Length: 189
Ligand code: AMP
Image (cartoon, rainbow, N blue to C red; front, side, top):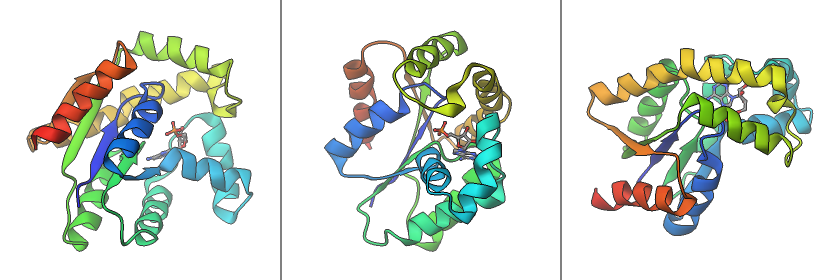
């Protein structure tokens, strides 16, 4: 079983690349953003708890996010491999993920960071706002989400890099080229 963490700022193309990777490799997709959106849309107790936080563009506390992730892992004991999209976003989340993998005699085999500049991310999200009705992408929240990434989430990169586990893929350019570059990382290991 091979597991992949796809890493990058909001609007880096994680969603698009995830779809292609799932098609090619058969990963079970775990997107914590999608899971939280599902909970808020269906007004579950968890959804009620995180709605305000999500709408502000801030990160949901680790305790809540890690518990939700664990539940999702437990739902998929037969998975051939997981693709983690939008998780981990903090060092404690990264540590929890390694711990859960170890518990299942598994590991995170690939960590791929899409390298996209802040300027490019802002342009892409502005474009996406016109096609998707995502409340968290409204203008004032966009700044917060990008700030959360560049102040908190970026710390996960050195965490993996120090262990020699980080693969960086240039995330600007044609979708197909970026996809091929990610596949090269997965296929060489
Ligand atoms: P995303 O679609 O991945 O950008 O996630 C949308 C929102 O869900 C984020 O702005 C956060 O409020 C919340 N969220 C998703 N994943 C995480 C995570 N790993 N840790 C904390 N909050 C998260």
